[in-house]
Image (cartoon, rainbow, N blue to C red; front, side):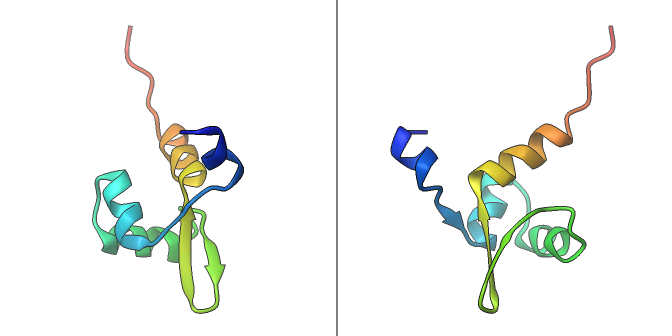
Amino acid sequence: MTDDAQHHPRLLDAEEAAWYLNTSQRWVRNAWATRELAGVKIGRSVRFTVRDLDDYIESRKVAARR
């Protein structure tokens, strides 16, 4: 991510967020509705920041067994 992108995060729609997370748009919409996934409400639309998606990924990590 460039310095410019860190200061001005791009907002992704559900389709782009689904692509980023390698999941379906339906899952993204359900995760937003249940507040499992953070988002930004703009009017009637919801957008997702890359930072929020990355935070979600980190929160779901499972440690490997040793």
